[in-house]
Image (cartoon, rainbow, N blue to C red; front, side, top):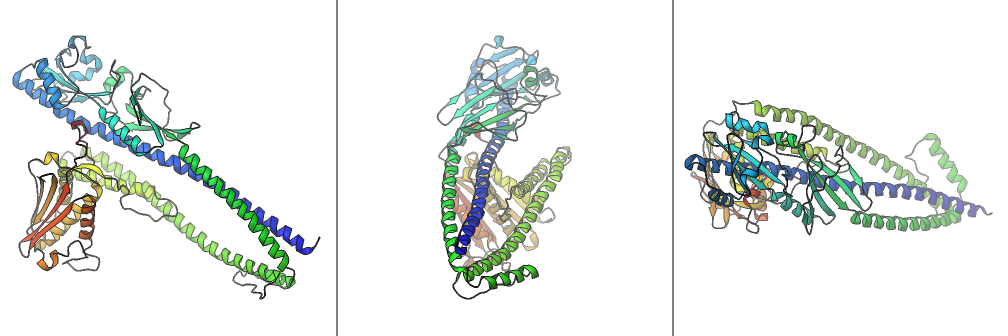
Amino acid sequence: MKFSKKIFISVFLSTLLVSGSILWTSYFHSKDQIEEDFSSRYKVFSDVLGKTLSQLDVRSESLMSNAAKYVAAQDDRHGLLSTHDLKKMKDDLNVSHIFVVNSQGQFIRSTNEDPHLIPNAFSFCPKYKDLVIGTSNIAATPIIHPEPEPKPYKFLFVPTKDRKRLIEVGIRVDFIADTLAEALKSDQNVQTLSLYSPHGKAFGHFKSDNVAFSEEKINLPETFSSWSDKGDHYEFFTKVTSSHPSCCQCDISGTSKNGEYYYVLRSTVSKSEIKAILASTTNKFLLYGLLSILLAAILGWFSSRRLVQNIELAVKKVKEIGEEEDFDKRINLSGDDEVAYLTKQFDKLLESLESSKSQLIDAEKAKAKLKMAREVSHNIRSPIIAIEMILPMLTSVPERLKNVLLGSANEIKELADRLKNCKFGEDIDLTSNNKAPKISYIPALAEDIVNQKECETSNYKGLKIKLSIGEGTEKMFALINPTELRAVLSNILNNAIEALPEHSGTIEVRCESEDSRCKIVIADNGVGIPSSCLKKLGKIPLSLKGGDTRGTGLIHAFKVVEDFGGKIEVSSAVGLGTSLSIVLPTYQERRPHKMERVIQV
């Protein structure tokens, strides 16, 4: 067999073996990564949806409390109310049930059924007697499955002023169906969403085209951190915190588990998308395999034809490089024969080696950064949890300051989560990763920012920040990204504070409802803005305070507000102050239900 043919076979098989090994390893790595990314995506989807349900559960209780207190006030004023009056109040307050219970726990009024057929209230939970004797002022349940109702409800008790009677209100938690229906619409891969009590009884099964309430009871997994492959779909179980993890009524009815009451969200996700991705990936790697065979054949042929001449000289130089371990040297043979071609390829390999070493160093640095980011995220959590646990114990601290501290702690937790979720090869980005707009209550958001600024500027004795909320603001809901609008309001308030000489003066923040728009006015009595600068605001970096990096905040503010469909109006006079108005369209497409008025700010 000719030497050139031996070289051809050797080069061809070697190239094919190396490329085949790389392709085989890369294929299975890509396949595992695709499956991991897909499952992680829907694990996060389930976790976020669970947190949303938990927040809705907690927020809905405040509306129930208001409804119950209103009925109790009417009882205090008019005495025992008639069933007819209670039914009218039920419709007006948008609750599903209103009950009146006497001091012995007997139901004496009910808007939905004969009260004499309802068991004694104290049989549900003996602690309800505390409402009568005065050691408790409110008692509520999480979402439960009252027999024989097929749909889930929440109930809440408050006593009348003389504690001779108890008022109980109940709501059918339709927000579960609404929230899960919206989630199903957002992702076609999600086939069904189901919610269960701790002992496995279903609250409901939700598909994109229907909702089913059944008596189904399943065996739930002991842990909820993993997912399972069911052949044609994945199945995720997520533990959802309830509004009352410790529930006396749930313990007595046997629906809690180990003294804890929570919900379990089961998500079934179709594998059709990932199957299509994997099929496409397989086809690509098959094509790469064919190309590698072709490349190996071409390389073997050229090597066998060009390698015979000057081969000894090439071997000599290769030995020199190997013996001296000087990988900066190159063979650099001239000509276009086989050896010259091989030596050029060898030189390129050396260059690739140097490049790979550099890339490896960069990868190690990136890995170290990622490890440090996750360690920082882990270390931040413990002090933040400690702060959250200590806050309820600070009885002398005003509730407003506690809310500011809690909001700050939540922001730090969010930063920690972003650090924790950083991925290898990506820059660490601490900006908000949640760009989705939400229906937000503008006065609540403004009040939160004002409270925060009052804490930040508490050292400025001459500074006053006043918040006023005008009439009709109960309709001031807007479809925005609350995180971005908070940043805009914070920046504008900072500008207003800096515009006050020696940080002394008054800043007014007003929330007003104007036609079908939400209006936030921030007015100060500071130095004002020259008229020559007013037309440039929001268009170019402009600052009266100097500095190369100043003046970009208003550009961002104008852009954010315009993205929300709103506008910013500015009026100012030098020496008198500045008034800046943020005008946003009121959310009109879907008027929030009274029991859905749960705002994330």
